[in-house]
Amino acid sequence: MIPSIRETLSTALTLLLFCVVGAGLLSGAYTLTRPAIEITEQAEKLALISQTLPPGSFDNDLVGDARPLPVNALLGLKRPGLSYVAQKEGKSTAVVLEAAAPDGYAGEIRLLVGIHADGRIAGVRVTAHHETPGLGDYIEIAKNKWITQFDARSLADTPADQWQVRKDGGRFDSMAGATITPRAVVKATHKALQFFAAHQEELLNVGCGYRMVGASSEERTAPSTGGHSRCGSLRSPHPTSGDQ
Image 1 (cartoon, one colour):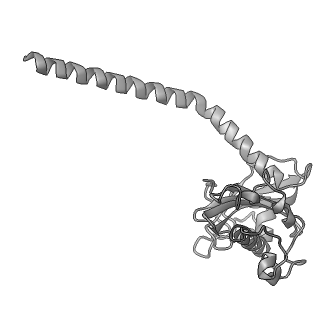
Image 2 (tube, rainbow, N blue to C red):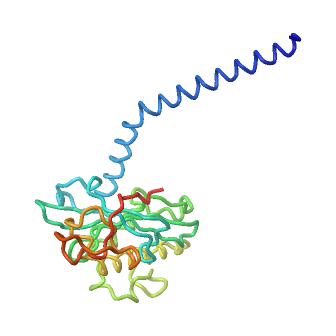
Image 3 (cartoon, rainbow, N blue to C red):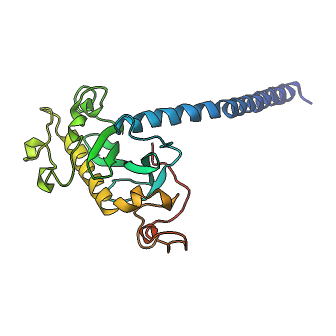
């Protein structure tokens, strides 16, 4: 064999060996660290969810008891999300909905909207956004208390035409020069409340199990023989998170 060809083949085989070994090491590292990563991610998600609920208002595993939400215009979700039912001594006290404002200044704003069983907002938190730093990012609780003005609001005490920023004649404050961002969050929060009002029994009825809340008529299945009619509009795929 010509020396130059032999050298080329040898180099190629060496590179191939390095690639195989490298891929194996990466795969092994991922397999070993994946459980720790999942635990960390679940803890971070639980921390955010917990911020939307009053301290001591639940004693269940919110993430473990999550139920799937459909793609729905009121929630602004582009793919199925999750709802987290808060329970205290076996009784449903609130639910946290994943939602999204598609019309932020720089794109979609992801939200968690906590709602008490009586329809009052327990808390709202932003989980992801691309708004301008130092301008539109005051929707983050770490940057500003702006988002706490939703606390205790409900459809009953805030008329539909008041779910706007004050600049538009509504009830919610915004900062000068940055009204597109809060306008989107106000609208998305209002719609999440409307979704809750339309599916309150389903959302709070943990007896329905892992079933799709607020599914369309095409997705609905008849309730099981041991179930209640209020579960009739739910279907039962395994929950798939809508988190980015």
